[in-house]
Amino acid sequence: MTFALTRRRFTALTALTPFIGVARAAEGWSAIEAEAKGQTVAFNAWAGSAQINAYIAWAGEQLKQRFGITLTHVKLADTGEAVRRIRDEVKAGKEGSADLIWINGENFRVMKQERLLFGPFAEDLPNFALVDVEGKPTTRIDFAEATEGLEAPWGMAQLTFFADGAKLSAPPASMAELLELAKANPGRITYPAPPDFHGDTFVKQALVETMKDRALLPVSIDKPAFTEAARPLFDFLDALHPHLWRGGKQFPQSQAQMTQMLSDGEVLMSLTFNPNEPANLVATGVLPDTTIAWQHKGGTIGNTHFVAIPVNAKAKAAAQVTANFLLSPEAQARKADLGVWGDPTVLDLARLSPADKALFKGGDAPGAVKAPAPTIPEPHGSWVPLIEAAWLERYGA
Image (cartoon, rainbow, N blue to C red):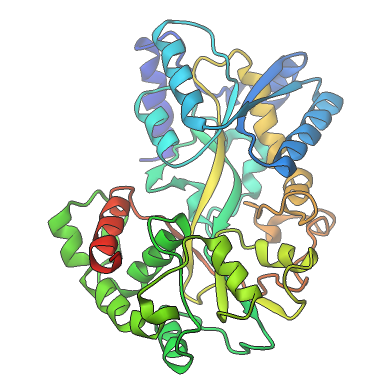
C-alpha cells in the first residue's frame, strides 16, 4: 500500500468516528508549530526506569523553552492500561486523557486495528527524513505490522552478544559458528530458557538462520505449518544442547543471571537486546574493558519502539511537534548516551551534518558494537506462543 493510498484510507474513516483525523502537512510545518504553542501534551509512557524518566523530563524542558509546549509525563506501569483507557474514551465520545503514547508490538496492533490512532503523521515530520528506514526496516514495521505512518520511531533494540575479548578473541558470527564454539568449549555456552524474553529471542534468531523460507515469518502461522517450518530449528537445537552449560539440561532463568555467569567466568558469552548494554556494563565497572560486543554478520532480530498520537488527543499539533523533537539529532544523541539512557538511535548517521554526527559518542568505547549488522524484523506474533510451547515440550523437563 502506498503512502498516498494510506492517507486516503484514513481520511475515509472520518465518517466512522468523530475523532479520526490526519496530519495536515499541506498547512506547512510552521502552522503546526504555531498551533502547538501553549498546548499541553499528556505523554503516556512507561515509568519503570529512573534514567528514562529523567530523559523525558529533559525533553519537557526543551519543548517548553523552544516551542512553548508543556509536556506532562503520565507515568505508566503497564501500557496496556492506557490503551484500554483510550478505547473507553473513544467509545464514550470523550476527549482524550493521552496526547502521545509510547508503544510497540501488540499495543500498536490493537490500537491500529481498532482505529484508535491519529494519522498518518509520522512521515510528514521534518526529522523523519533522517530515519534509517533502509538499514532499520523495523522503523516502518512493528512486529510484522506495517506502521503506515501511525507511529513515529523513537529508539531501537537488537539482539547483541558480548564476551570478554581476552577469553574469546574470535566471536561466532552465526548460529552455525556458535555451534562449533560450543563443541570446542563444552559447558561454557548457554542461553536463557523460554519463555524468558531473551531466551525467546535467541530461539527466534536460530529459527531465522536455519529455516528454509523466511517469507513465512511476517505472516500468521498455525501449529501444523509451524511444526514443518521449525523442523530445522529443532534439529539445530538438538545438536547444540548437549554441548551447553550443564549439558543443556538446565538453563539460566534470565538474561541478568546469564550476564552474572559471564562476569563470574562460568560461561564465555552473554546476550542482550540493547546493543549499548555491554559498553554501559564496562563503564559502570561490572565487566572488564576487554569486553567485546557483536551481532551476527547476516543480521540479528530487532525491533523499534515508537510514539503515537491517540485519535481523540486534545493537543494533536503539540504531540506532532514533540514526536519531531524526539527524532532530532540532539534528542536522539542524548538518548543514546550511555550516561543518560543508552537507547540506540533510529537515525541514519550518514545523513547527518558533521556537527550533528559528532553529537553521537561512544562508538569506540570498550564494549561497543564495532560493526553493526542489519536488523531482522520480528516474526509475526503468532510464532511466539508456538515457539515457547514447542521448546518447553521438548526441553522444559
